[in-house]
Amino acid sequence: MQVLAQFIRDFSFENPRAPNSLRMDQRPEIDMGVEMNAKGRPDGLFEVDLKLSVKASNPEGPMFAIELVYGGLFQLANVPQAAVEPTLLVECPRYLFPFARRIIADATSDGGFFPPFFVEPIDFAALYMQQKGQIGETAGQA
Image (tube, rainbow, N blue to C red; front, side, top):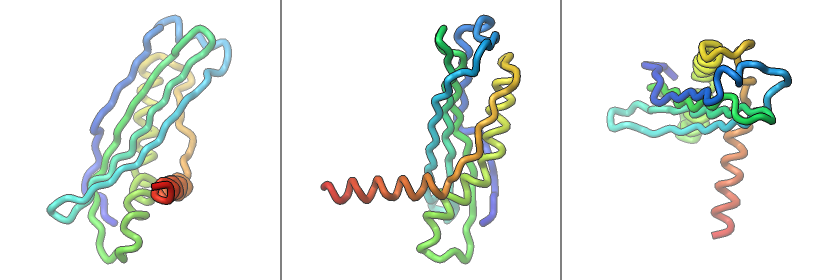
C-alpha cells in the first residue's frame, strides 16, 4: 500500500453560540459519526474517504459541529483480491485518521475551545466487521 496524496475533500466547523459556548461548566455531550468509503479509479488507483462528524452540546444548546471528509489516494500492489476491500476500508482509514484527528483538534482550538477536542482512537476493523454484518443482514432480508 502506497499513499500518493492526502487532502481535505470537505470541511465544516460551526460554533453557533460563540462566545457563550466557550464557557464549559460541565463536560459536553458528544455525538460522533464515522464513515469509510473507497472507490477505484480508471488508472488503477483508489480514493479513500474518512468522514468524521462531531456534534457537541450541553443543556443550554449546541456548542460546536464539525464535519470533515479527509481523503487519500492509494496504490495497492501485490494485495490478494480478497484483501483489497479490508485494506481500503480498514488500513487506509487507519493511516488517514491521525491527520483527520489533528484537523479537528486544531479547528476546535482555533474556534476558542480549551482544551481542544481530540477524537478518541477508532477501531476501523470492528467498524468494518459491523458494516459487513449489517450488509449481510440486509441481503438476508431481501
